[in-house]
Length: 440
Image (cartoon, rainbow, N blue to C red):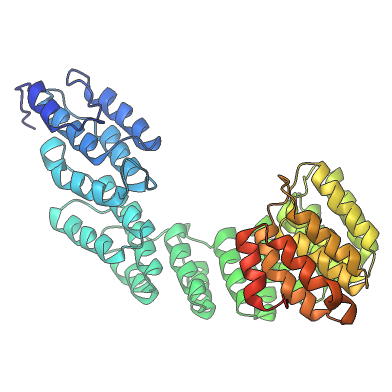
């Protein structure tokens, strides 16, 4: 590739802005690209700086390393908006148009652009780049075709993705793999067409050549059926997966546990959790919290406490959802002292209560007839303390809680006190006032 050898630092300086810090033209290409990539990641590389970099590369006699150039382009395209550059994808496209003068684009280059267009919600632009790629005569690989499948699925064109998967990949010189199938399977599940996803899964199982469904494929379809409320089908597929020798992962078990708990079947959910542990899997905080919430909503406080102690004993750290589930369990049976103690324990370990935590406690106090405690808690929330970040959202929920439990006692003092408390927070005060809870 021909390089322009005339050094023109004066021209380079004239093109740079007052805030631009263009690198010297004597650096080796890989050094210049590495420095620029770091600036992209730190949000300090402007579009003008990027074009100056390409000017510098054009003046170099040394060949530009393909990997470093593609890495830089990927960083630009995926960079979040910053003060220096508000649209990384547009800049990447502009730089791509200059790439033939610097180094010929490769299949990896096109894969990067397709993926970034997909992330940016620009499927038409991604398809245009794929068409441009086909016209170059470059040989497609499984990565770029897999990215094309993802683009089509994200654009809700999953039927077209399935057609590419089943009929056109071989024409492009690629053999579908597990990732390709799972991409389209997920597309169908996201479209609430899990039956189509199951058809693809069964098709995979019948194929030879190492393309059998894996745990991700099975779990994706199981989760899809669970979202559609088809628990029996999901349960049957779960059993089929186990019979085929595919070991469920934590996400598989968590999906099953979640649905069972929502159906009030915490005992069956616990059996699945114990089965996961017996198979050597370590439940994560999501699985434990889901199970704890199931126990809480069914009033199984002994089981809830035992599971929480087991979770802590296994070294799994509870989060705000875990503590909120415990609080909810105590509030539902009117054990407000224990609920308050859990909230104090939560704060003591550095976890901030959120709007759901506060609202659960306030609702519990009202249900228990402890109006003064509910209003006191809300007044304390209004205090300018670092741990009271849930005020804004809780203020939206409090009017509903007051109306839900309203009586003469509450409305003698409640609305006025709440209005005065929330008035300190403009957003919260406006929300309460607008909702009609305050009656002057």
